[in-house]
Amino acid sequence: MRRDRWIAITTVVCIVLLWQVAISANGLHAKVPSPLGIVAAIAAHVADGSLPSALRDSFLRVAKGFAIAALIGLPVGTAMGMTPILARAVAPFLDALRSIAPIAWIPIAVLWLGVRGDAAVFIVTYAAVLPLALSAHQAVRLIDQRLLQASHALGAGWFLTLRAVIIPGSIPVLITAVRVSMGFAWGAVIAAELAVGVKIGPGQGSQGIGQMMIETLYVRRDVDTLAMCMLCVGLVSLAIDAGARGLGRRLAPWKV
Image 1 (cartoon, rainbow, N blue to C red):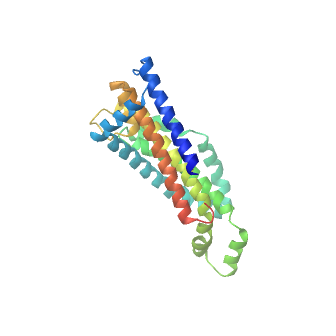
Image 2 (cartoon, rainbow, N blue to C red):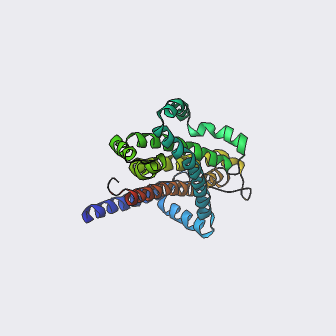
Image 3 (tube, rainbow, N blue to C red):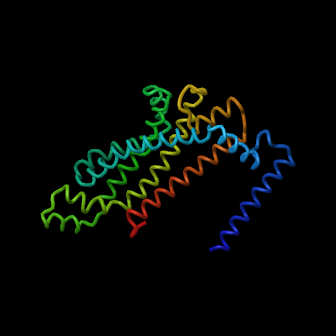
């Protein structure tokens, strides 16, 4: 394992060195980012506080939108799993919404909520709520029916059955749903900020990482800063997924 890790590290270092040498030798730095330029951009934007602030604003939008999505999607999906009639009534509506990409809602979200951040929260909520609802529905359906029958035979009411059987049995599926939904949510907030960021100038509102990319493109045209933003988007996505997997290991160590 240790040998494989060193091989991977060496490979990455060699690629980065070749990348830097190629940029320096061919004079492409005006349009192609370089490793040293990205490091310098990170140092500069961390020092002035713009990068931490942008990441914080984007993540807060994701957290707010995901919380709203969970409060809506999980109860709806669980109710669908426990009530087949409700599932048959609601499932076609959810399937129809699922066919509409979150970015297609951006014009309406901007029209309804403006460009100061609420539109991005709406897009995040939409991107996360459908996977959560459908996964919760599927999780309840996958619970061993013998456990539900035993619960009813022992005289448990619907609330006790929900707390003692359905919720614990749904956790493994829901953890996977959280990982998928958070990935969708993070991608959606970047897309929303890219779409509305051009309308928000410095000092005019909350700046996210997507808005920082738009400002860099149209104002400074700094390719290293653009690459820095892309790198940060990927690293935050990895961190979110790692956090969800860690949560899954704690809540359902027998499955995750």
